[in-house]
Image (tube, rainbow, N blue to C red; front, side, top):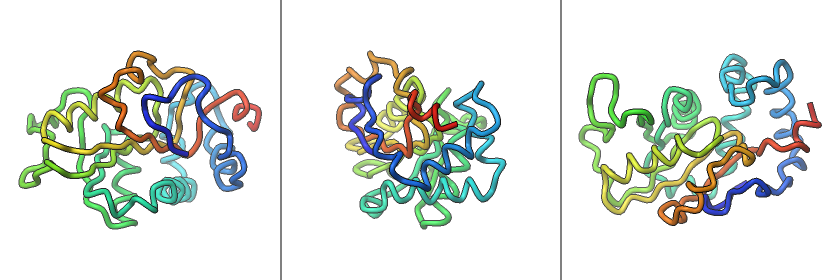
Length: 192
């Protein structure tokens, strides 16, 4: 599914993804053990077959636009496994964005050395879009370090119930497209 960031709200998210048997299978397998921490993607990362299916599902979301993106940006530690697997499997240069500080642990600027991101299209990869604060911070970091950059976001799970309304009402994110494999709603919870 895809939606403009400014349109994400509690009622957003068509349930069309539930028609896709592979996505339903991923949902069930991702949350079969524990519903206490819905944003814990490390369960997915610990199952290689499931992780492979998630990566393929994410790629399929953006396949038509894949060649438009110059780089993938792994958003924080949690986004690194998905971003680097996507980049390796589908051949796309990938770099890391530290969403907390805007610099790496070695105090290097997040903009990769020798890479000018100005005028480039970057796809931020993260496992979840919960409040949106982390993704928007990543967008801001990239925009602060490059002129005329286009940024979109690709996630496995959207939690529309928790999205920060002020963020998505903010016009500076209106051009950002959010791609998500599935959104967590009451209907999805009933699958488990």
